[in-house]
Length: 81
Image 1 (cartoon, rainbow, N blue to C red):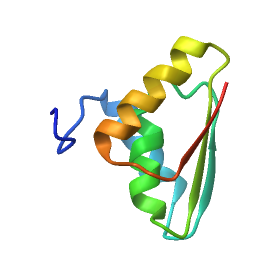
Image 2: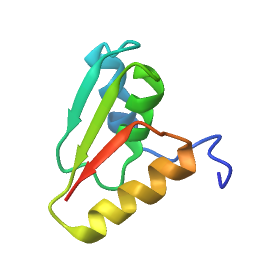
Image 3: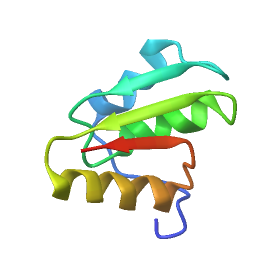
């Protein structure tokens, strides 16, 4: 878990990014994104040519997204709080 090899998510949360049909180079906006699991998964799917923008209105939410996406190794997540 600590090295980002896996993450805990509900079954419903796991289905979101595959259903969006994300592909390398795609762009995604994740609203109310904390704690960041779907943003991290989306970043892995869109790759270096894509973009994931993660929004959360609370500063603590933005910090949670940053922590989770960093742990997962997602580098292309733009955070907006």
